[in-house]
Image: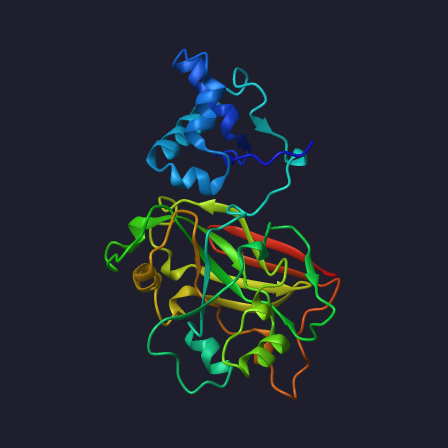
Length: 309
């Protein structure tokens, strides 16, 4: 029977079941016979619940990981075989998913815009669009121009209201790779009324993963490399230094409306999208059986196949 579990990757690239590892730590290191119950209360039931529990949950996860790594035999079945696992998105049900638009200077240029926006702009993707790092992306039959956009996802770790740019990164729980899938023809139709929603929010239009990488591993994310390929052909190859509004600015700006643990901000994308192709160039629209790989330096790679809906 499939179960959703919280996991962490140790230094040997093994997947650790955090609930079981923390329960083992409590029983063996703290002589707590109610380890299983305490583990559920401390860590929560899913990633958003974990983040809401704050520093106590993070401290429990650190102790669990250290205990499982140091005591692989006594820790029981907490170290999982890769064949046992299907990775979900690290935040499979974000409270809010706010995606920046027109936020890379090279992407603005390829889309024939005269200049970027004067302040951050974004659109909402529905939380139900989120899928895991190896899940299939359904190609809706009504969509003719399906596009990709490699981005960095910024996961908020604690209530974030009216924060300054200087303190903005203190509110980040971690980072993940993200692919903002877009139905460009649907968006063009929606834009005639001035608002678009559906073109960004079909099921499966937000692959995210493979992990949430904590800020101690990425203390300065602003120059991370981004790369995306389709069927092995590189389409996007850039880095976050091209962002018009930097990560700190984005967090500070959107914190004016209030952000909560488990909310996700995405950075926008660099040049190389299918919509940026000129009429005399072969089209790059995604089609069924295409394999899209989106990668962010120090985080990992998404590998998703396009399938007919």
